Image (cartoon, rainbow, N blue to C red; front, side, top):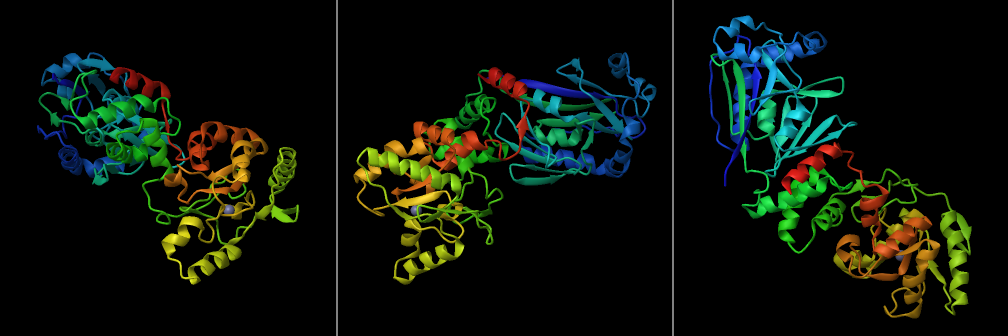
Length: 465
Ligand SMILES: [Zn+2]
């Protein structure tokens, strides 16, 4: 395989401060990170102190003819501190914004990172950049901090990134670490900072199984609204463990959290009144949450669900099926009594968990769920068969279907139904989705808050194909 080398050159280094220094790091993240750390340490004081004055430091004069000057040692003196540096990629001057702060070089992060084959995600609310490299690295950085996390390993680079006019500028040492540069060097004599990055030519990125996975994931990022960059490494691991799955299934199941044991990583629900609210073994209602309920047909419901029930019951009767309610709303106190009674009967926690929710985790707590009699009957009961085929027409979905136990974490319950707005119930029925799957694909696919530049992601995906 022929390696392709991409070189980022930034000119100039301020002559008075740049020390002649050339270094080649091994092709590992740790090595590139270490190179950055060592380099940044020497410039820390100037860089940190100066970034507050950013407004004065960009928009400085362009250096025409810099490339020529850069060839000779005499050019060093001609290039004044604060002059706008030029960025060269593979020898061509690129329109990538860069500037010096007292000799410390900052580069516009997104275009430089994307040039090196990474997909960049931005989380505005968290002011956080996540990126996935073609080599399978996950990088996380919060703007304004000097810390990056690469594949779970924290590196401190001595100078923070800065934001100006919605563009993030990174110290070049940070960029080198994030792209896992093969080498990072600076030389006063050559008047350049130089990053080398080698990677396999486009189209031949298939030398190892991992690279196949990465290629597939990257190729689909542009198309998938539910892709979460923070799960990138988990996607790779899950795909490796489940090679029969398609990438879109891998992404869906990892997002849902099927790899986390039940009751292991519990989130408190922040949208309890949303008709699409998801409550399950790792999502819990706040202790004091109680929905607004109405008594319909002798039971407490959310109004929409109770009205749909009346309509469904009449339709079933017309089909010769008699539907009767077992129960509907159960709040946290009732659920606690219910759960504890079963434990006190001498059943194991595992056994009770298979068929019962712990307090705060029950779908009955939403006010949208009901159990239809007979509860815990044979799976071929005509009532269950009617519900499975017809309840969606009234907004009710059988929540705990057979075959989806690894998602909903209960033994199948063909008598337990949950109401959703009609269009959503129709999609769940037609595509055979649990609420967790529906949420990830349709209801709230961008739950993690990261956005990528879709056009760029698509371009990168096309190059990889
Ligand atoms: Zn139930």
